[in-house]
Image 1 (cartoon, rainbow, N blue to C red):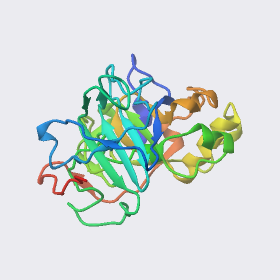
Image 2 (image 1 turned 45 degrees about the vertical axis):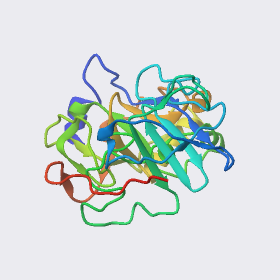
Image 3 (image 1 turned 180 degrees about the vertical axis):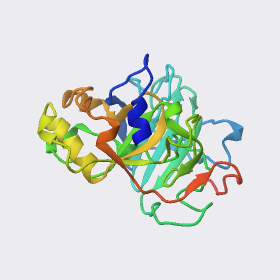
Amino acid sequence: MAALQKIGWADAGRRTMLGIDFSFEINQAASSVARRAFVQPSDALPDCDTAAVPLPPGGKTEGSDNYACSGGDCHLLVYQGTRLYELYQANVTSGTATGGDFTGTCLVIWDLTKDYWKPAAPPNFSRGDHCNGADAGDMPIAPLLITAEELKAGVIPHALRFTISNNRIRKGVYVHPATHIGGPSGGNDMLPYGSRLRLRADYPLASLPNDAARTVARALQTYGMFLADGGNIFISATTDAQDAIGGSALGALMPSDFEMVAGGERVPWSGYDCMRTPIAD
């Protein structure tokens, strides 16, 4: 954290203050919503799942008003029953739940009856060490997002998700709960993928600009935030949260205001492949 404080959240020319990214959509599919098969690259196996995905009418992907991807990550997040479907670069050419061609890069199905946090020796943690996912760290996305409902209630009862530039992420290793990396290029004094940062308990919450910012800060003091992917310095949120908090409401928070929670072994990226059986039904 001292090394990160010295160089800052990001280099000049990029976003240098901690912000909030309001680009994510969480879709809820009733049990009656049919699941659609989709096409993903042949090299997605064995890392990615292959089951059909429910597309509720009127749903949206990240950064879009419908299911059509116009560029970017286009994460599709869908809850149905005891499953959470997360698909990277999802695209339906028609933009609608039916019709068009349905494609994606990597599907992850989280079984909500399973404890993915239960410790296990590599390569058996979570979905499997070295397994790719819907984001670079292969951690769930939807459960780590700030939502408007939580901000209005004044309580966020879970950890959050954040991204930072790849040159601020340690090269060649990760720490659980991550099981994968993107393209980190940072030195040994930088954060590994999967790092959990927790806002210091003595941070003066009254100095923050509004109650919504203080709600986020209390969650950061209690549960922290996990380093999930490379990118600009953002905490991830749903689109509807934008009406409840400004994107720069946490801009005063610096690396020195956080501590890194001990995450255990730094798992080397080289040495073994993803070992898992994809969920196919």
